[in-house]
Amino acid sequence: MSTTDAGTAIDLRSDTLTRPTSAMLEAMRTATHGDDNRDGDPTVMRLERLAAERLGKEAGLYLPSGTMANLVAVLGHVSRGQEVVVDALAHLLVTETAGLVGVAGAVPRVVDSNAGRYDLDALERALAKPASRLGPGLVWLETSHNWTGGRVLPLDHITAVAALAHRHGVPLHMDGARIFNAAVALGVGADVIARPADTVMFCVSKGLSAPIGSLLVGSAEFIGRARALRRMLGGAMRQTGVIAAAGIVAVDTMVSRLADDHAAARRLAEGLAGIDATLVDPARVETNIVMLDVAATRFDAATWESRLAAAGVRVGSSGKAQIRLVTHRHIDMAAVERAIGVFAKLA
Ligand SMILES: Cc1ncc(COP(=O)(O)O)c(C=O)c1O
Image (cartoon, rainbow, N blue to C red; front, side, top):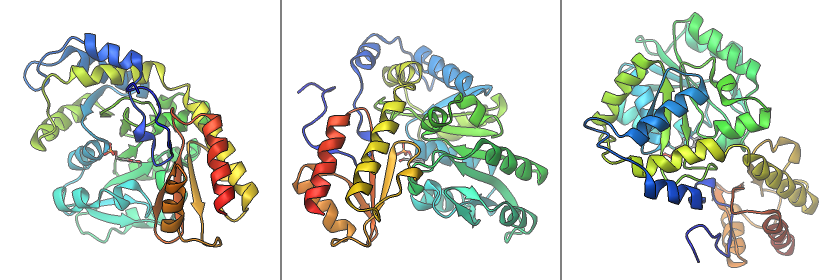
């Protein structure tokens, strides 16, 4: 099996499983590089310029992971003891709190939300009356929204949140790990989604199929400081052009095909709802993530996970009743139909 072939199991655990394309491997082999942490790597600089241009910002910074890019954003915007206004199911809170609190010393301020969309009155109250006397330092948005099943923030919501934040003198950061999925779902450029935000993070390592890396974009002044913060965290690398070359191919050529992943996710949701309507509402599947609720079925989530794995379908469970399915480049429609068949047999 070559490194670009899909394996035999139907692996729906994450779009991070996507392996580099042949074009990426060739670009990596032939990339020119230098020392990114000394006098610069030309391929990394190209990727950073491309990212900034696609997101409509002045400058970009290449980092090893989305988690580090988000942490650098927090460190760049927020002083110790200031609040980061965030929704309860944001990846930042569910998975990255240790960095937010332990490294940045920021205070999470959770605001009521639905599918990543804030209750705007609650957001206004949080900004007007911070619990920390040091005040709010940052407002956070995530799109597409991972833990609510890849939901996409409406553009007018992003604009309204940015206006509120800015009225209180607080910047807006967008966790756009999958911003290109959101862009494809909305039928707009990623720059349109990013416009109201001061800084944006996106990953080339997820559905776009590059092996490694995330980009942080914003003003030239902010990215200059972010570069110093990246080094402080040990995230400055050397001949990084070797991997950044795949990121360029990802941004340049892999965005429009995300529509295939979205169609696969929708078909998967429809098929599963056809087996048991309590599992999922297909109308809520907007991108490449399908969140199942197995509470009304005969197995809990962990049992589903192990039984599905034994039948050749890999999924991720969390809690007693939630299963996350993610479609990606190695999941074609035939794999979707096979997965539905396996669910049907077990149900
Ligand atoms: C919405 C979101 N933000 C941030 C991250 C972190 O990215 P990484 O795994 O590259 O650290 C993820 C990873 O799944 C994510 O889904």
